[in-house]
Image (tube, rainbow over all chains, first blue to last red; front, side, top):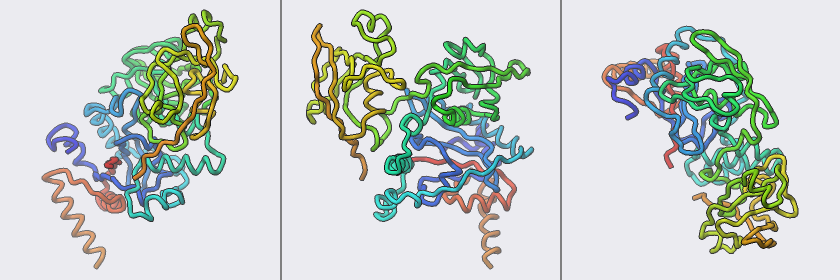
Length: 344
Length: 49
């Protein structure tokens, strides 16, 4: 049960037609378009399929960082308010259905298996890869994290800012501000904001917000930092992302200088190596190794770590040659990548 | 006849909602019920592997 019937949320829910969908077979995924790696996601809409707001979304740390009963209650109350006043409806997105994806049909419908949400996202990417339209930065990094631009929400309060750091603080965002618009679009929930943030072209260098500051609307321009779109992809079940079974962290500017590596390069230090890498003989990396370059390259405009370079520039099954620094020695090390196999 | 059955079904569901929160599992039915009652829809997508 989502909420007891006599709770504040329960009382609000009784004013809705409530529906829970666990099979996506006939759902218009063009209209209900969101990161399919959310285990739960809500839409509040009317009988004409005008979406008032969304609720859900996630960050790197957890699928439920931004989910709680207080903010869901706020969202439900706002949904009822919007239904009473009926704001103008935006143009309806082009319809799209799971049956439009032949690979998905082969692997699920034809086998009478459930069309799971994450399968839709993965097969969409496989089709994009086949069509040559896959843009990994856009299509793999579906849930940009507000914290990367310095926006920390007071989650139970919806879009109220708890803390502002980095780019957001430099732009003048203050604790207590409530995000009201993102790129000119009205937003009511974290899911609304993340949806709009994800629509931002990956080459964009600014984000434009309007915040409600004590009843006064204030426009803010945030200078987006490099790799603002990056989010963790390890939890995602993806067939188009090469797997290599190590974790790394970017070297600091001081570390790069000490090692004579370019400041703008993607050199990184290995934090963890999975036993899978050894079992599958993918590479010989060890913890604390520094990956200084890959295939003779040390700099990439989109990558800030060696692992991100591999994800963006390699396809599953590709090989590469790593330039590894270990104990003062430089090693050329072969690396193989794998395709994730997770389907039933 | 179909319309009558639909109205009876909607009435039964509406009555059930007086006592508890009824979760439909069919989006098309939710749209029909929303049209008939004038209520908004609270739609949950849940991944249950």
